[in-house]
Image 1 (cartoon, one colour):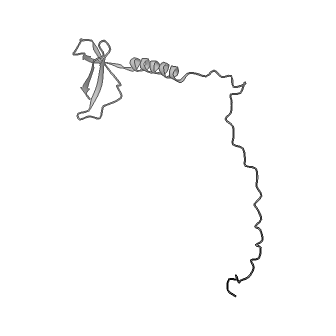
Image 2: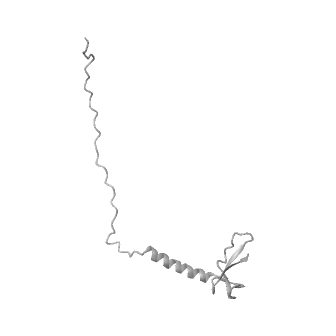
Image 3: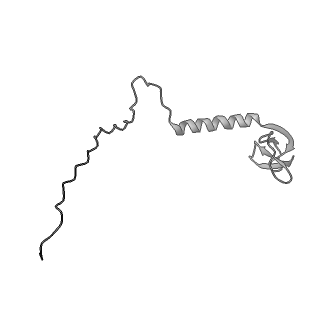
Length: 108
């Protein structure tokens, strides 16, 4: 018969079981400082400034005298770091004048 749709009627498909929805775990909240955490906090910039000063004092006190005089002012030169030989050709050690802050090098 023309104009008629032939075929089987579609049978209803069985519904797939829906997965049980479990409550999603809550994201951990950032911890707020506790009252018993009464340790005094230090400003990072202040700490770094203090450490730089301490290191500078230590470095100056660890500098060893050399037998050389400064070509600028004539004061004694000190080895900047006596244990370090610079990787140059020829190898050198760094000297510093404490009076005028002149930097020079001596062959190692």
